[in-house]
Length: 273
Image 1 (tube, helix red, strand yellow):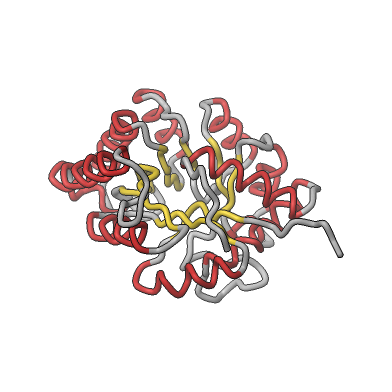
Image 2 (tube, rainbow, N blue to C red):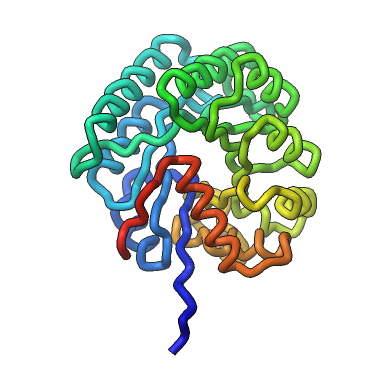
């Protein structure tokens, strides 16, 4: 009989939406102890909080995506009230029916699509960084074609402990800039794509205690599932690609990224599977 322990994973960033219960059950069967269900607006943040109350091994974030940043201060006020309420309930103790809020975001800058104007994006990003500081929560960052401004806003507001660059799409230079600011980087299925050599170079250089893995489900399914609707249970394929880039075993990546996600998001317990 083998003494090898089964791999345990954390999907540090996904969007469960309406089929959450099915996806979470499947993920648990495939060795995923926790999934972090990401809020991107008021409706989806409320839904993520609700799922974190009712589904085992689900943690939630509350945030406003840069695509919707032009919704403005009124939406940010609603989101902050959600954060305040969930933080107060969580401070009273962990129990059934209490939301597991672990981060602000995803928030940041997206100059590729620019669904919201750049000034509104920067203002919403800065406001959410401030919320992460106020409520002592991690921060989940979306940055696409906006590295310089992303770092500028972070430098001006101060980088919260537990800051994560989700779905990291930069190369070694951007990874070093994030690491120099105390942030961690999270790799998605893109790291397994053939044309992602710079991302793999970044995955090879990050310290063992500063990287995570994610699916960003239902988007960006990793090889060998590319082209399908992504699922949290496929985070292990992301881990395999990161392991190949780092020249280590998949089991080592599972252990390191699970420990990092637990520390970053305060997931002090691993649910029984």
